[in-house]
Image 1 (cartoon, rainbow, N blue to C red):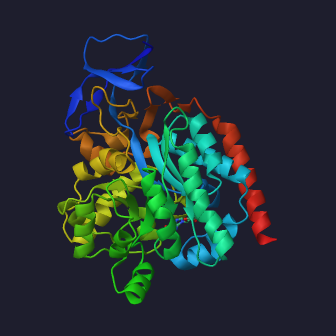
Image 2 (image 1 turned 90 degrees about the vertical axis):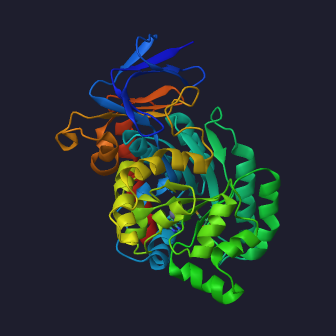
Length: 430
Ligand SMILES: N[C@@H](CCSC[C@H]1O[C@@H](n2cnc3c(=O)[nH]cnc32)[C@H](O)[C@@H]1O)C(=O)O
Ligand SMILES: [Zn+2]
């Protein structure tokens, strides 16, 4: 057995307690073998003065959008997409998506993210980047049919199903897939009726934006006389393996629907604040038994891909939304960024436990802003930032050691990404 010992640190356990222990990893199977003391292994990774946590899981993103970071800010969702983002994305080539994905993966690995879900296009290029980077991912091709002729629309929907069927299990099983209609208002119901049963029959989960803004809720209520999540359920899109992004404007009835169906919600607080989409009722959904994960959404609406940052935003916004300082407490924040997102995406990671995948982040606690150390769960929720992550491990492999990413060349990717983004924007403006 090729073995790795993460030694000298404090370890965050599934019940949110912290204990001084070493973590023994089997690098062949990629799983945690033992949490304890007096353990030995072929290789060691130093974690003294550090906290070993489950790797963070970014439950909803459009990673190649890092190329548009800072390109269009300060607009609401519909105008932002239609006036700026979609025209720019229409000029993105497969090679642009490839370099954008690598840049986003670098950023995520450097902030302790070991798994993510992504909705984009030219997705085989994202598969390639994930394969090289070494993280875990649930990927899909995002479908938009509105504004397209039937032939193009049909091809877009088919591409999403074909991708999901072909790439599930890629990268030695680190990649899984989903069927991804963009939202309930940007994909025609006839396409859902045609393809959702096919995805279902193949056991493929479904992921889409739901109830993100009021502009997405009102047309469904007006046209069909039901709430959006009733409409989703009527089209077979509300099952336990499915996960929706946002869930901002959900009423009590929809919260109960989510809880009964076991469909998870990925909360994206930074995007919801930046696009002024609204405040998701996270504590109320949680109290009703809805599984909640955390996501960054695309970097152009955030503007970073760090889950530690997102966790703090979730706590702050959750309290404001509930008008209760006790809402969305630190433990819930940490649970959402680890177990919550992992379980929404169908990953077994998210907890440090014998037999579970060794997807881990090691956080350097020797920092002025992490001193004193009364409560490390509080620090994870409120004080730690992405650059505090010292080592990142996924599937038993070290992806970053002492802040050096081992699987991707940082300098050349950053240089290429800058050039690629400059060329992309020159094509957009010409
Ligand atoms: N195949 C589709 C592309 C859909 S990918 C998913 C899309 O979600 C978009 N997106 C990013 N952030 C958000 C958000 O917050 N809400 C809704 N859509 C978003 C993103 O720009 C990307 O175009 C087409 O032909 O247009
Ligand atoms: Zn999104």
